[in-house]
Length: 324
Image 1 (cartoon, rainbow, N blue to C red):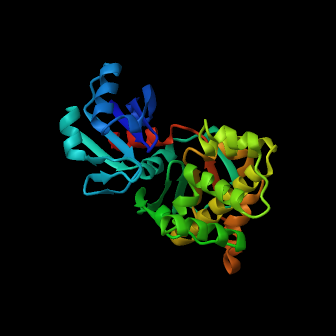
Image 2 (cartoon, helix red, strand yellow):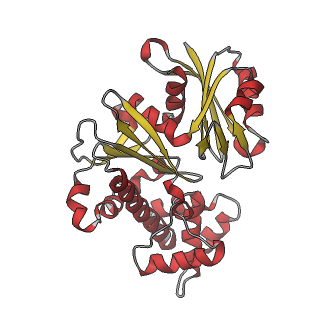
């Protein structure tokens, strides 16, 4: 059985035809489109189907945003996506939409050892709750709960919860963003734009030394990509400090989610940013912040933490949901 699957983010829309024969999932055709170039999802899907030349009877799209009663108003795109209207427009009656991290959670079961980098081995409890979060254009979160027979995926919009600064530097940065936006969510920090916010804040602090070459590169490239490149190369202290704060915040919020859902089955870090900064994620900064939960630090040290480096987890999860 072939199904249409989509991983729809605020920056890119990835669409694929997947073969779900014999209970296994395999992507057979795939294309990527800039999300912001389209007034909605349907035109992108129709363009893809015309290119693919395939007929499918089922479709599922994981979309970055809350999905309520089959409808999603995307926070990082000027779209409103209705599953019923989308099914009509693309002529596939069995069409559904789900949150993108619900899709990623569905895809975890399809991952192999080569798709993961382990930050903390821990000791997973059989059928324990599993947490998932990931930074990209925004910050997605979700979790999986065992119902006695199988894991059930639960959506979350925890990325829009209020950011908690861990120290004096964090409070100064939070105040800076509060003055600018009126509210500071975790997504304001843990996203591509968030990494740029961190750099901009640190560059404005008294005594900061900003390299001209870095500032110039940001005029022509994505600022987050520039910060990441220089931080990982070790040739710009300001970029390195920005990424350090980003990864520490990432670990802290991963730990918050793990405590909230009691993720004894493990925590999976997904999203577009994590695979690009694995070099930094493995240096201990993330896990130190993850474990830093006072009297519950010992519990946190027993929770497995993995980074998903496969770019296909969202597509595989949407395909799995469509096949079900």
